[in-house]
Image 1 (cartoon, one colour):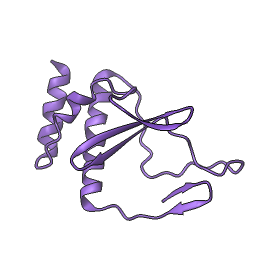
Image 2 (tube, rainbow, N blue to C red):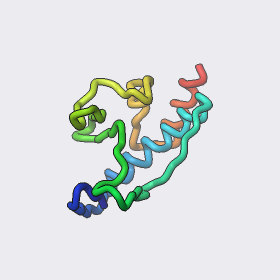
Image 3 (cartoon, rainbow, N blue to C red):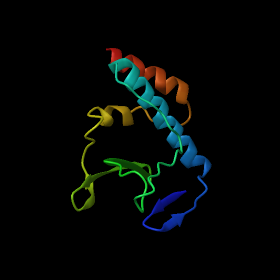
Image 4 (cartoon, one colour):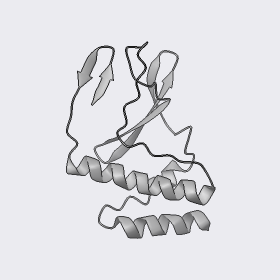
Length: 116
């Protein structure tokens, strides 16, 4: 569910969507652990504030579209496509470890690459 300026959108994630989301989460967790960064997961939590007509503004969003990652960043005039992440400079390296057939082996390989 998403809520923005009075419009509620409902969708049911597909198996592919849930799989990619979980895969990214596992790789991001290894990245944060290996780099000593704080990382807190909240899943599908909805953030609300009664005084506003929308939820929380997010500074950067990633979309997995047609086997590619699209990065959008929030600016003063809304979201714009971006060539790289402000928050994960090693994102290109992370993407090299997306191997859907074996998540566990890919996460181990990514961890080893981060340690090297």
